Image 1: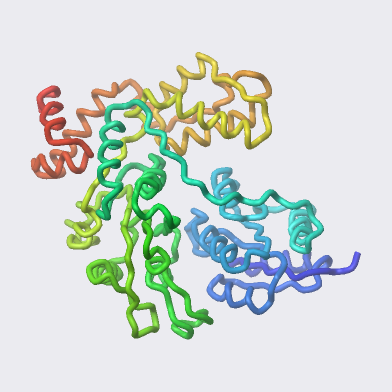
Image 2: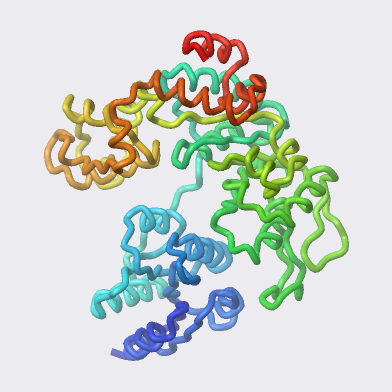
Length: 446
């Protein structure tokens, strides 16, 4: 078979680059290698590869895959015709699903099987050249109303959101990982006067620190090595809309001052530029970190916290929303039955009981993954407990007998302690009214 197409391989392990290049040279007309993603975009622009084999991690000791996801998004946005296959030593189904959602063609796990790797790369090449089976087009995101559930805490948050959303007030959303902070941000945007323009999202935890400033404020051509053209930052892209800044606690201290000035003046100056650009944005920020403690330790600016924290909403963990567990599971069940082309199945009473008793350390995201795996594993008409494949950490197992009231009392006591007894701050941190806080303090004898 004649050699065809161009393959670009990006991996920080030069032995892997050599091995895969040797293998791919038999089928591809040209194979280009990079040991760092720093010049990835300019290389893609010059070489115009059909297929990109992209490693997920480029720094020793870091195996989150965030770097790979970041560069995947960049390539998909700027070069949508390039088929990206992600390369990782960590066979994580969650990461695979996340990558596919962001536009990856496929996912290969190290150590790889040569035949499987080449089959995947050649399938990507066929699709790139218009001969492969086309994947269905990703539909344009249509915002749907948020599932609020029936818990009292979520009813309070819903009332607060409906009041705040129609204003331009900046909102800070806090809560554990997986509680649905981005979904809440999208609900705030959906209900706002800015909903006619799509919300712009920026995951601060996925951006390499060296690119923070460029991502936020944009850059001019020639501002740094790989800046081959002017590029507006996210703050300009979100003008007239909402900028959702996830993991805001990851913003480096030296950029917090620039962010504060930009928000105060409603102007940004791109990296390498002199002329400021006007912006009209609403900030919705989210974090699972305690920004108040970060202020005390000097790692987060107090004035920036006040600027982004006009309204504070704290999302409760799923274990405090027990009434919502089964309804949420049914929503995910329906979604994944449709996705995988299966007849709609049901949740058995025993399965519902098992779900209700589970601690859900990963919150709604964990429930979603559990239900996806359950649909994949189930061949009958009913999701049974063994389909769930539940995992409970030792720490969660030790607290399995703790009641919701115990957890609520502990949460309030810890908040009172961390806020130095300032009940207004406690109520804001917990996302409840002062009157509700007073009632609970009296109820629990705090």
